[in-house]
Length: 209
Image 1 (spheres, rainbow, N blue to C red):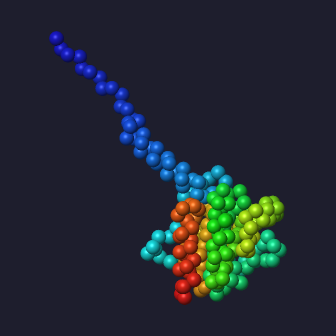
Image 2: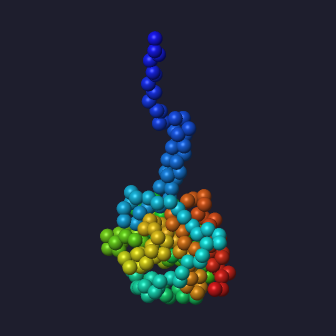
């Protein structure tokens, strides 16, 4: 009597190894998602990044970023060309951005630590300056921001984001006295970002190029 051929059983896609691998990937994605916000859509996220040692130095600050006069929270116009010859940290942010709110106390601390050595800092909100006027004022008071805060124009925000290739915030640019971008950061990780920011500031302060 001929034996009946056994039909192959269904392939199990979710093997234990595949499940574990998937959970690890999802965990990493979740960590990245918490580090930054899309500048146009608060629900869209992107990972935090920083230039790695040995990478090419970023270019000089675009002319439109330096020459554009921008509105500030204290009523005094902001023009980044006025900071020529100084080490400058420019931060793109928004009041609704969770990672921006977590980053701000660290920026305030760094400003207090390094302003005596020549560091200037400017925070530029990507929000509408009229619609967000009150919320930005409240933000400055809540976090006791002691550096210049204002609003990036559309052209300035686009020009800076084109340098990084990302539209997510927060973004920080460490600029040398000669106007060259020393380092650029996207997103904020409470463990990794602060020491990287601090090192970039230290490097920029001793950079004569």
